[in-house]
Amino acid sequence: MAPTESPVDLVVRASRVLVEGAFRPAAVSVTGGLITAIDDIDTVLTALEDRTLPEGQVLIPGIVDSHVHVNEPGRTDWEGFASATTAALRGGVTTIVDMPLNSIPPTTTVEALDLKRAAAEPQARVDVGFWGGAIPSSLGALRPVHDAGAFGFKAFLSPSGVDEFPHLSTEQLHAAMEEIAAFDGLLIVHAEDPDTLEHSPAPEGASYSAFVRSRPDASEQSAIDHVIDAVRRTGGRAHILHLSSAAALPAIRAAKAEGLRLTVETCPHYLSFDEEHIPDGGTQYKCCPPIRDAANQDALWEALVDGTIDLVASDHSPSTAALKFAGNGDFDLAWGGISGLELSFRAVWTGAAARGIPLESVVRWMSTATSDLVGLSDRGRIAVGTQADLVAFDPDAAFTVDAARLAHKNPVSAFDGSELRGSVETVWQRGVVDAGGRLVVRPA
Image 1 (cartoon, rainbow, N blue to C red):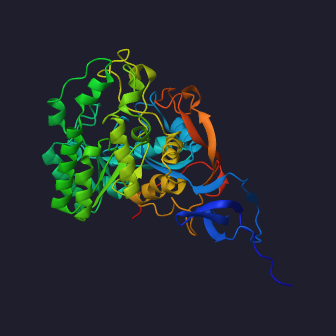
Image 2 (cartoon, helix red, strand yellow; image 1 turned 30 degrees about the vertical axis):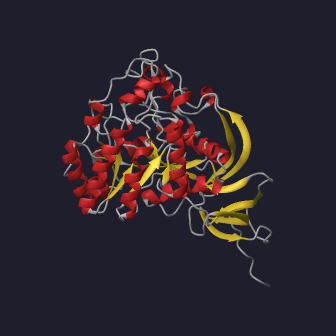
């Protein structure tokens, strides 16, 4: 008698499975949390569970969001790991990397990193990793945080908005870059120049256009020039966070053509909203750097398509409603940050579809490229040997955002009332629905 073949744990079949950057019919086998085979859709397989997606649903890898502010511990009334990871899961996001602020203490020491992990581990519904922070007092002591598994170090070049996370001067930026380059780490940068901001017009209450003028394109251009210079001098790696200004694109293109180790992200809100449609007093749209005009938005989309911008991450940066609407619409007083974790993938897909950009490009920007940024080659793609984080997604379903129904802690979002495309139907983590999250560390 022939030996009985051991069944795999799960087979997911679909007429459109995203494999090696293109959709095709396939059957994806999962055992022990890993993808073990990708076969023709009608291959006969022995499985404990064999699932065929209905027509209209596609199978994609889980989204990896490399820019999320969870704020726990210390400001858990703004957001926490339970609410943030629930929002992530609902949005098809299976891994997040948490920023080192606005928690208290910030993640600038090994001890603070341990506090973050202790807070996250019992609550996380998706996988969670952590960025460290580079602030003036932590310079010279970054290596231990790197060795403890942080994915890199975030620095601000202008005031961060919270006292416990001060910004680096240009001289300190170069010192941080030199220190991090010595162990081939990654510096990720909020790039706005404080001198330019100081000499710009002040915000004028509820006027959105005045708020944008207070944080001009030149502030991003100048700061990005400083980062490029630091990369050139040290040979290190740097990543520009939340690029808002298309005026900086020529310098970025030139740096990449030079072979400098520079990557760049933008965010769903810069791709979804424009200055012309933001009302005065609409502080739910406040973020730094700001959402700029429609022509600028077009240029950001073009830079994504041509590869100048490498990826899209949410920059989910929530606060309490009281802080977000402080001053009754005064942009100088309201907290700056957009809550979009649950909606980020679908918001970008909505904008991409309207521009004729295919879904596979959006997944590349928001799953594969974000995984590659942090070195997690075990996810962000459907391939044999990778973690079986899979999403059944209906790209054509339409819905209207109701902020009160979103899972993040405080029901405020710039996306409230937006008409978006896409429905997350099923999420498998390591081949299991709602398997719960794990802590992840930077690969050695």
